[in-house]
Amino acid sequence: MSFRILGTGKSVPSYVLTNDEMATIVDTSDEWIRTRTGIRERRVCTTESLSDLTTEASKLALEDAGVSPEELDLIICATFRGEYCSPAQSCIVQRNIGATCPAFDVNAACSGFIYSLDVAAGFFARKTVKKVLVVAADNVTNSVDWEDRSTCVLFGDGCGAAVLGEGDDLLSVNLKTKGDLDSLVIPHGENTFPKYELGSQRPTLRMNGREVYKFAVGAMSEGLEKAIRDAGVEQEDINFVIPHQANIRIIDAARHKLHIPEDRYVCNIDRYGNTSAASVPIALDEINRAGKLKNGDLIAMSAFGAGLTSASCVLRWNK
Ligand code: COA
Image (cartoon, rainbow, N blue to C red; front, top):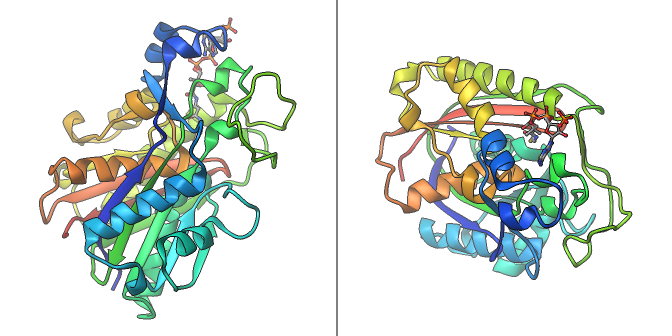
């Protein structure tokens, strides 16, 4: 027994930061960002808190699932940094939605949603839960250096959520970690409004873009290949691939190593940039709400991030 997905939700901040506005903050251009990453704009928390986003996405996922907060047996929040060191972000969600179940956070950076699905699957396998909320959110723009054009243009804020019930629809999952302190590091720092301030001295995200790029292409192509093989299906059988939305060139490079037609890849990077743990569940919610998913469809998901972590899985849609 693993689980089936009963409902999904998402929440993104209202402020749209376009590439043109980004070019007024750092020395960059819409053309550079679009051609090197596929990003046109991203959402940035200006008035919203991480708790606002996680609460709203969770409520929408519960509504979509037809599940009440009291029915939840567990809440897992995937985030690299909740609004407080403690309590965990999941505890704040529990309080805000009126649930009473246990709650804890999982930190696997951008891979956190898939890691959390696998953690949830363990609870279902032990038959200790019937309904689980997995909510994935990061306020990355609060951790970036707004004077570093090589990183700040890449990220956005957001949250995605899924409510899980009993079922057998997680067909395979593989998690990987390669402990690394050089390629991508997000130090502890202040976590206060305003969400981005020019000239602030707080510790910020540091990244070796080329190293992460190389890691990402291999992690995504090999991870998807293995997950699909382990699920006992063929690549051609996959109806939707939901890749982590970090860079369209990473998605394209991984795609070229696989045998899944391009139109099956779900991409919204142009509108949101890299929203870290929220990236995969936001895309899942968008195709769910657009009515694109049919029961029996096979969805392959793949993500990578700081850690370095990576995770891939295959799910059957059976809502
Ligand atoms: N605008 C304009 N120029 C920029 C720029 C920006 N926002 N950022 C970097 N540049 C410049 C660099 O300074 C460099 O100039 P130089 O040649 O004069 O030194 C040039 O563009 C090329 O830089 P480079 O780092 O080689 O670009 P790239 O094609 O490798 O793309 C990334 C950079 C970051 C987009 C790419 O490496 C990447 O996506 N890496 C993975 C990052 C990632 O996914 N991280 C999150 C993981 S969860």
